[in-house]
Length: 86
Image 1 (cartoon, rainbow, N blue to C red):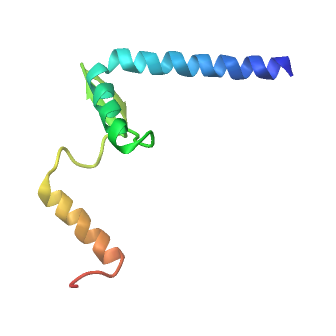
Image 2: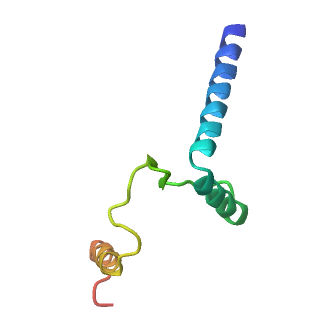
Image 3: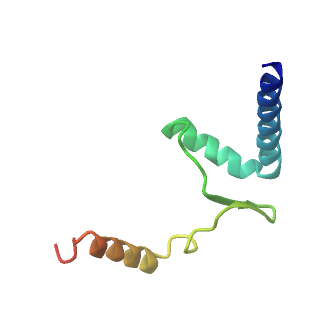
């Protein structure tokens, strides 16, 4: 039983070290995420961020808010759900 507890403690320590390294590598990104969490709760998860030449996560299928692509994505979603022309 003690071995299992030690394994859990080691995993927790490893996760804490990883989180701290992310805060060191991405200070501005993590500050923004903290602000979002303060408003919307701990469920806020970043899918992708970039700072100082480093990246984390998976880039989204378009850059920024390209409105043409957003509209097309919305139209594709509407077609899938049978909402075209309503």
